[in-house]
Each structure stands twice: as structure tokens, then as C-alpha cells.
Length: 210
Image 1: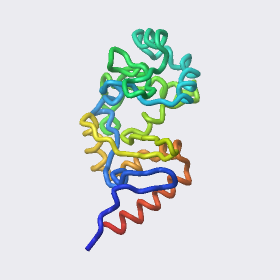
Image 2: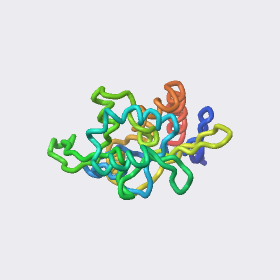
Image 3: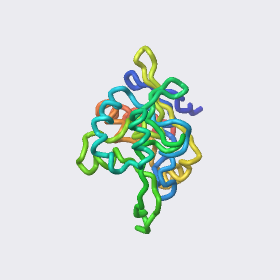
Image 4: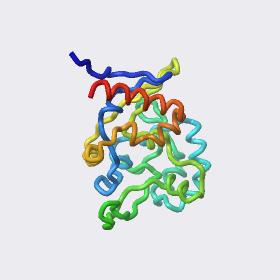
């Protein structure tokens, strides 16, 4: 009888939900228009080190922030402690991350204009060479959610959210697993050697259970 893939895997000090290997995902900005930066009741989780880097990038991204966002940053800073006691990016009117801005993009498939997409001012400044900080790792890793334990262990889980349904559909069309879609931020967070080991484990498990 064929055994199922274990629900939890471990690579080094990182616990991984097997959903990251078996579920497919690929952001479809033309469909969701960046809803993950707007929906929800708190900002993006950040570390103290990231807050310092964000503060160092403020001048570069400041012109792209809305007047309301600039006012929030001037009043309470780039981050605050939410009701769960976590540090998160500041938000505007209980909704938009202060680092969001809106712009039109071209649909990558049809090249038709997609109006009013929510984009990241931090990422824009970095991509244009005006700063060195891309974005909080929690943003880059989504739909992976990271949880850190006091003993140094880290757990990675796949977060399901209705606003990302188009990304799930696109991922299934492309047959692109979550861990493959997020190769760049996973390498940024845990290193190339760790990611290579993850790929090896995924290949062995998926081949064995296919």
C-alpha cells in the first residue's frame, strides 16, 4: 500500500508543511490587482532589522507614497505592534499598507492594460536602483507564512486566502509548486544550500508517491 507524503518535513532547523510541495501557486497580478497588500486587518510582519532597512529606504520611496500614507509614517513610523503583539508595517485607514501605490500594468499574456493595480513602493525603489531593500521577507514569501519558535526552529506553512484564488488557478495551469514559485525569496531567507536540499527532498518524495 502506497504511503502518503508526511504532513511535516524538516530541512535543517526549518519545519515545512508538505503543502508547499504539493500545492500549485503563481501570482496573477492582472486578476487580483495586488489585493494581498490591501485586504486584511494588519500590516505585513517585519523584524527590527527590516524596520531599520525600511527607514533607510524611506527617502527613495517617499514620492510614491500617498499623502495619507506619508502622514501615517510621520505620526507613528513605518511599523507598529498589532493586537497579537507582532511588529507589522503601518497601514492606512485599517486597510492599505503604507508602502502601497496604485498604477496600471500590462497583462503579461495579452499585453492589455490592467488599471489600478496595487504595487509596492519599496520594491519599485529597489528595482529602479534607488535603494537596496526589496521588501519585507514576509511579503516576498507569501503565500508561505513563517512562524518562529523560542528554540530557534522555524515553521513554514501554506496560507490559503480567497483573494489568491486566481494565483492557485494559474499555478495549476502551469503545474508550478509553491516552493518553486517562491525560489528567489526562499533562497534569500534560508540560503541556496538549504533550498537545494529542499528541492532534493521534494523530488524524492514526489517521485516516490507519484
